[in-house]
Image (cartoon, rainbow, N blue to C red; front, top):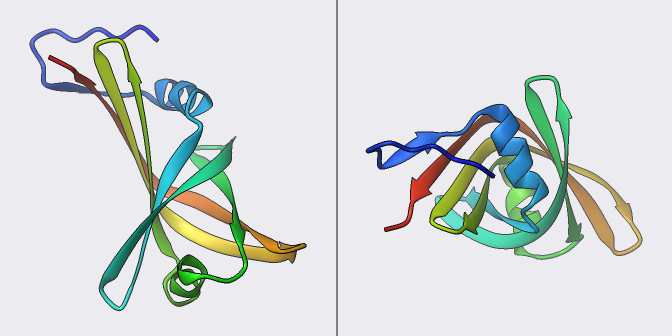
Length: 124
């Protein structure tokens, strides 16, 4: 990915650049909370653009702390990062999760983005 930065600490990524980075990223960090207790866990994901939004799909076991948290609070945050040469890319997604019916021992989690932002930082 080609990035042009002139005397800046960071630059904002376009939607096209964000989708390109997502294609090269293997996992994300899911941020959730319940009763003011934050919880972050790495997860594999897939994504599909839907108009101005992106729908992310994550796979999870049906039981466990994150599932209990998301049953009480459907607001989530996803964080994606990627390092290339002298650049560090960071994408933050705020959205709402839907827990889909179980498949065997797993449940699909669908996150529809409300807000997506991406930045590129120069590594010195």
